[in-house]
Image 1 (spheres, rainbow, N blue to C red):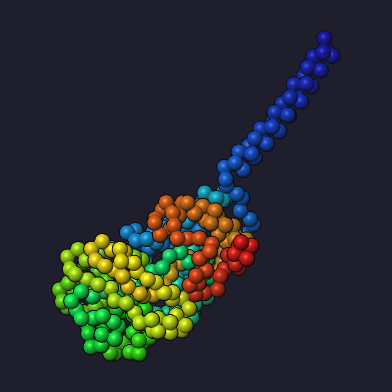
Image 2: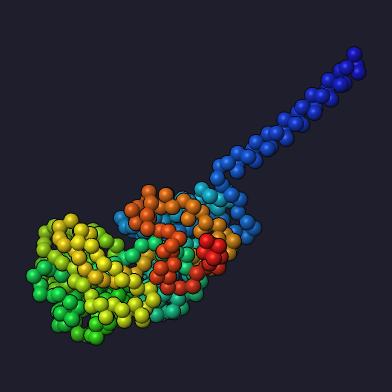
Length: 331
């Protein structure tokens, strides 16, 4: 009896060990099946992604990117947060207050060069990818008599807030047409104020840099007859040759509901930048995760449909993060 008893106890013990091993395997397998991956040593565990105002395009796209990163790695958390404009995003990222940020590619360039609205060089961020064009639109009333940039001479022109990206865009476009900003009566207005002043006859034209259709222009066109002015072809070519971050864009007739918006213009690009403090292998894996979940980007906003590997470097105005460069080199 004793011998049979001890044999039974030993057999039971073996079964318990095997069951425990099997449970560990199942647990490991379930973790792998969850789609999460463990991060590497030295990875930044808390990622803040600066977006823009909650009513804009940057916010839903940035939140979607953060959600992708957050769900892809079991020891990294990522959060997309509402923030100010491109200038403040670049400054905060450079100062270590965030790790990723959405900005215009021209603003990223100015920061890296310490030019225009930046009094010093911002040297702690690199490029990840460009997403969609932010079109520079010169808007005026249909009966204003303004049919070209040259017609702006002596006119009251809203060129954006002082120190804004729009102001820099407007100045460069005017100069590309062999004029200077002193040739117009420049009004430093954001487009909400410019739209009101256009309708009231207090300004003759306004520059706005935004994705099309732009809500403010759509609203203005519902109560006034407006048009978008084309830029001169030679001027656009000179502009793109001098500033690599510009691309030419043809606005289609049906971009807006209430008027024929056909126009040839230029655009800067909405882009993602990353802190140089993010390790190369981490940035590689986060970039990979985003490109493997493009459906989430498309679902977040219609502009998210435009992110793809083929155009990810179009209008790239600064050096790529080493981890991003490695990912592109492999794909």
